[in-house]
Image 1 (cartoon, one colour):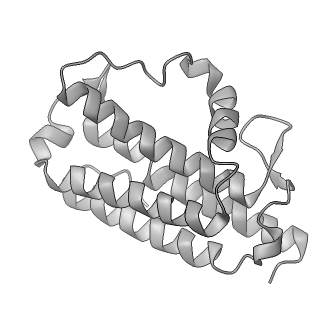
Image 2: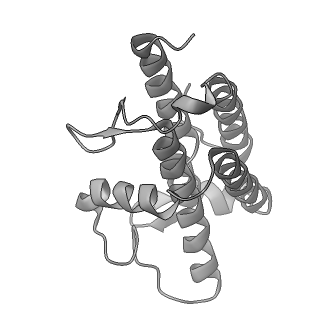
Length: 170
């Protein structure tokens, strides 16, 4: 799928990739969501399907936090307070820990809620706001949202499909 360059394309990419991922997640046996046998976000690490969804939820909620802070005129620590862009493996582990105690079904609902809130945020914007000017360094608002929604959703689906093949999940 091409990189979205308009509001409509961004909404389509998020919706399509989210729906495909959710269909894939629905086929994971409940008793296997906690197995740490999926290739992790940090090189040489392993995670569970639960961790994968926690990662996506964490990024979605983080993007929302950026927008809330910016809209309130407050400074935004990119990517997150206490983390630098070269520490994303540590940030992934933080997300795994943040949601570790949530039952998987509840985590899926929280993931969907974060996605829905991001869609609502996008719907309040026009193409000029999303793609007309840099929002963070050289990246537009639309690109920053896409980096943390549709692209990771597609990546997660690929990881999940590979894991299912190699671990015997139909």
